[in-house]
Amino acid sequence: RQQGVLIDALREHGVEPTLFEPRGAFILVRHDNAKGLSAELKRRGVNTDARRCPTTGAEYVRMCPDFLNTDDELR
Image (tube, rainbow, N blue to C red; front, top):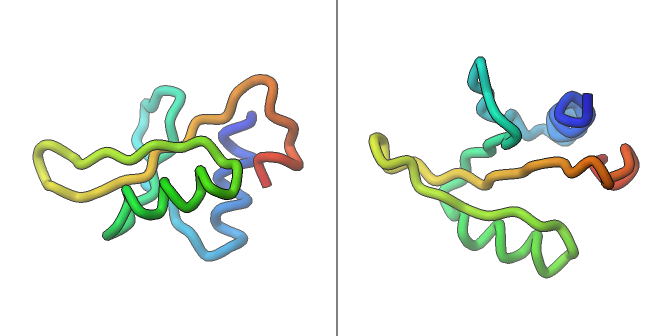
């Protein structure tokens, strides 16, 4: 349910997450400077990390809602 809230919020802001089915806890957002974006989000109090896909080289910011996050925090 929390992933759905986060996915909807991202889409409302024009960000299309990369969704795999089945997927685990993480939502991926492709970005050319994922490391830089992740650092900026961290500066703003949002915990994420950045990874490069080993097969394609594409960069992604990884987001994972925690059961302690409120819906407002996810938005």
